[in-house]
Length: 510
Image (cartoon, rainbow, N blue to C red; front, side, top):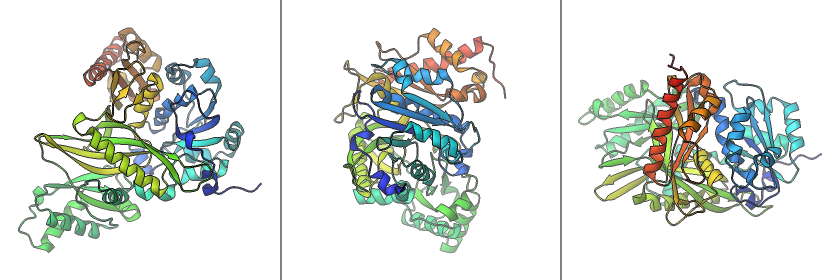
């Protein structure tokens, strides 16, 4: 049998295969591969990394369509309760009917490596997966597309609904800045890509010399993930003004040598992927970190490298933290009203530029927003060519409400009319939660009446339940009919979980 190339396989994609919320549609098989396919140093920073494969379970929304069958791959077997907790939320389809069209497969390998690499190491398992997928009516959906996912597509001879990794430059820090400039999207002053400390030092010096009012800048690995490849570099303590150019560069070089980057091997990565330096935005009476998410549908069947319609899906306020203040912790939906429309316009422009390059499926653009009086200044920071931390909360909202986004207002409306809001996190962590089983959590939340209620359109849905017992960590999306109600649901859920854990005798451990 003649094997098709990746390019030829991509030509099999159908425009409507990217739509996941219709109650009727394609007769198609979906292979979900929620692999964290990234640099190993970045994976090592994620607590309970293989459990993050559970976040994409909200993609089971596709099973609302009776013509869809899904194969969901994970590193370790998923608990029945974890899967059923999602299936039972899907309106309009009996859980048993959806369950018959869902096939769960796993590699039985909990090592801290990408799931896709584990799949490629198991030809017998790939053979069983291939038998579940109908030729010409199947595609692969991934969290992120790397060379590993491209290899998987070629091995299985199944197209991949995602951006060709050969286009990955457009999701890098340098590629993002190039896109922003092309689209006229405002973005901070910054440098070109550098690949050694001498050039990075020179770029930092030139940035400060062009903008001597800068009190801080940020160094970014070109392919950093979730803020883990970013590190702020304070400039004020270096007292650069009045120095000779040589002395200025000497002080900057010393500061870069000891830069506390979350990615421990960042100097080695500098040589491999490069890094750039960018102005750290500050000032104003308020500062926030909004983002906009969209999707690019495949072009006409049989086309190669031709993307189709671009749709803005959502906007969020991101919650950032960690040692650098750059690590994604959670989000609220939607983004603030004063700049939401502008945010979505910029997201549409970037999406259309990405589509012109041949990108497919999910993308997101992160911004910094600063308020000066009654004016907000939006500055684009980076493009993510993958699903991300804001993807699964929005999937959850879509899966359980069957609502839709109003493109004019950026608000999401339930079929019954009210606009819906949420606050979500991947990082609800407390020592009290260690040792709790998922069934314990369900009992606590049910007793408190905080599970999502279809009639009231409020309550909480959970993910990352596999992290709960071992790490005392889980994720949740708390939905309400206003931002204040979503915040109140979040606070009540967090409080009840800690109280309930205490009642069960969990006092935390180090």
